[in-house]
Image (cartoon, rainbow, N blue to C red; front, side, top):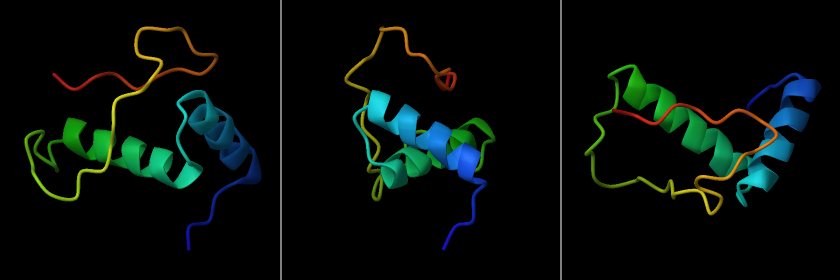
Length: 70
């Protein structure tokens, strides 16, 4: 179980919908990206990587996108 502020969940829900993801998969995507940027999860790691590129790549979204890893 993950406890989130209801307002944060609403933001994540809209953001996930913009990216054509479920809220659960979008949270995983964001956590995986944060772990990579922090050096905790190498970028080339195989197995279990269920993230996928956004179908809106290059389009403006109403919510900010996380920075791409180097």
